[in-house]
Image: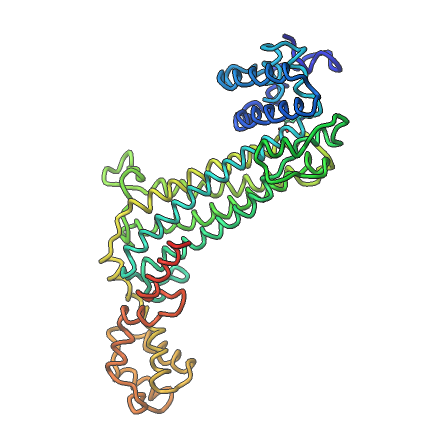
Length: 459
Ligand code: ARG
């Protein structure tokens, strides 16, 4: 059959080059299943409203079932999009007198917006499940490492002792907020634009609530002009994906750094590593590096999407066809990145001894020592900060006598005379007692961390 959209207003057919430029068939593979569902719901509604006959409805539904079985490959890919390719195939199967009735009271503008929302909804649910799994894995590795000491960093410099559990739960919590953002975005994605037709709705007596219910939407995108023009849900969702990817990239960066000989905190499982084509000894953390790299690409997708939507007048503009694939790409990459991260964290080997042995390097207990001076002697924190700072300039183990010498210079008094004892000093310098003392909510103290993990498991 000749092109069903090229028999009326338009006399000539575009050449291959023009088709390639204008077609969305490639990206439309994302919405093939959704389009059939939308056709189903619309057709049933047309029948319920008495707009098409029962018999025509059954023929159309049967045709659609067969098209679904045949798969997208059987469609004529020279059409400009999936909607027309599908309708054309249907007409081939059941004849124009029947198949030609399916598009009554509808436009591709509301159709495509509905298909995107339907597919995105499924993708979001799948992603949320994968994200949940990653958070569970972080929680379970954390629960095995509540007593694994490590240096905590600021500016990537050793700062204070902490535990691996404390570090991992930080990532888990950040990802939890990404999950909450998805959930919130979901409520705005799961709304039905169908029935808006081109933009001005339709004079057919259609039932928008019915199609919305049949497709499992929570409600309508009510205004028909808004329904076909809005892609804010795409921007919102891609922004959430971008934030998630940025969180994952931070984790990936740590996996890369922690795998170096300098750190040697962890060793990634071999399946997430690659070797060198020339250096036989190499084990490179390529999966983590690629994840870090892909996060940049997703930032680019968000920018491309936003810029495509900017300054478009109401209502539907074909530019919108260029917007959607950026979101699909972001979704696909983010989902696989979440899975990669889950696998890497679940299978990595933790070098507990090395982590613990490095937990005090760089005088990480200095803050606790300064705090101890304050609590033991009543001097102001800023003065204690100065005394310990001077001590940090020197080398070797710190003892009460040294503290007295510095305090004498700074304050003109020895802190041992104000109640500071050798035991207090050695306790302050012990990383385990540092951690135990940080037992306020959210801190790394062993018991506090156990409680945190129980709370996380509950939620
Ligand atoms: N391929 C189009 C898109 O993705 C479908 C809607 C086309 N509508 C139109 N009036 N040309 O936006």
